[in-house]
Image 1 (cartoon, rainbow, N blue to C red):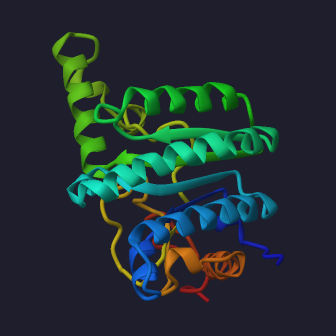
Image 2: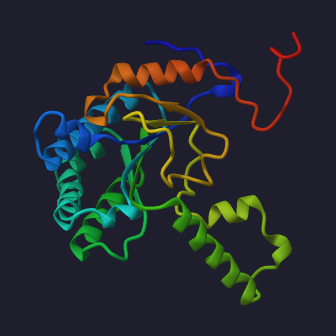
Amino acid sequence: MTISPSPTNVLDHIAIIMDGNGRWAERRGLSRSQGHRQGVETARAIVRAVMERHINTLTLYAFSSENWSRPKAEVNFLMELISRYIKSDLEELHSNGVKVCIVGSRESLQPSLIKLIEHAETLTRDNDRLNLQIAFNYGGREEILSATKNIAARVASGEMLVEEITEDVFASALQFNTVGDPDLVIRTSGELRISNFLLWQSAYSEFHFTQTLWPDFTGDDLDIAIEDYAKRERRFGDITSHKEHA
């Protein structure tokens, strides 16, 4: 599928809230764990689809900091699942030029998982075909709070003045600060909210909501979202529009 976006909506960064694994499994009489396994298969397919469409950055919301409230067995399974994904897919991702970055708090993670994450990031840090960011144990409010505390400490220590705090300075203190903000945020499963995902970074993102549950999401669904995005006119707060003044 070939889409020619206008100069105002060149698509560089897609972020996806991968929602619906549990409902997908329940509708089929399967366990939630089986739904999460299928969700990983979908993630693999979408990473390849994004690369085929020459998108530079893909951010996937895999595990929210609020997800710790889920049943312990499910949380433990999700921790094991991310480990399995890294172990099984890292070589292929690296050979395909994918730079892997796992973003989120690591305080509650097992040392073995932290070591695995660090290995994946170190191994792939010089790759430049696709930036794959996985939000794991991540929450947007927590990210903003942490950045605020960091900047406040710098002011208190005399390292910087209050007057020197700009949007760029604040953004640099965030966990997601190495690539541009998402141009397009996709949420699957029909829910119409962003669930504490990239609250700062998505201020001017375009949103696409689909009824499709994440395990059923395909390259065709991705193309529908991209085509929808291509029709948008991004003004970033500017009221001027050639359509409005035609």
